[in-house]
Image 1: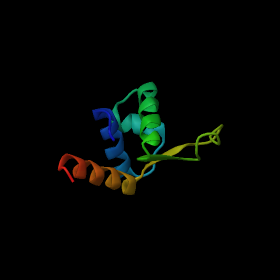
Image 2: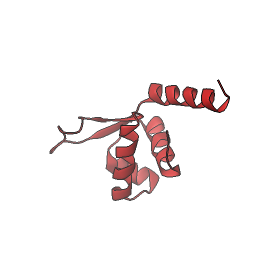
Image 3: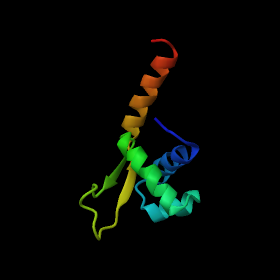
Length: 86
């Protein structure tokens, strides 16, 4: 679900700050913009972060990223069932 400490930090910051731009996240986390963008793509593929406007409709627009807490909860529950043998 979360492939790195940086991704966990991005998700934590989004959960606390609410929808944020990449610049706001870079300032809050200290993660470089190129690295942050790679992590945001991975988190979006996992469904735990969503972008507004969605990819393909972002040209010239401010993009905000938001944590998808229900999806995080769903994945965490699946992981707990897996590790507990359920």
